[in-house]
Length: 207
Image (cartoon, rainbow, N blue to C red; front, side):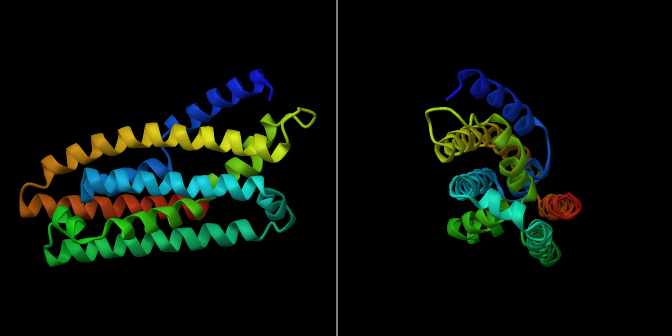
């Protein structure tokens, strides 16, 4: 694989991952409203979703989505609707007066992981990364097969997301824990988290 292209991709990808966007907002919303553990679980789910994107792209999904342009907007709207559903559940928790961190304790880790994987799978930004960015760094005549090159670049993106989003989750989880010590603070944190998720849904739907 071309070393120059690999390093260039790393630079561009890190710049994109470090730029606040839907993934940042989602991780902050989860960590702020439901604690550090839930935030890190959300990061793990996002990374798992992008790992699935990597495998599917290496298998030819990117070419299939190019052939069926209507599939991408459909996924975008489904993803936005899913985030709205999660936000509504947080708002209901805040209205009932259930502290956000206590609600997170009752929510199974597997459920948070599943929700986060689906969020990543339905995120058009992730799909567009494999549709438009990664192909720019593929060397068609290299000794390494194209599918394997896509897998390597996708794996580097997953590692970058794990590091950057993990740091975001730790910082937001710490801030959320400080704010949610009182019942009123817990309600405010839950409401703020729901608003952030609604913002992610709006960005996703309009991407």
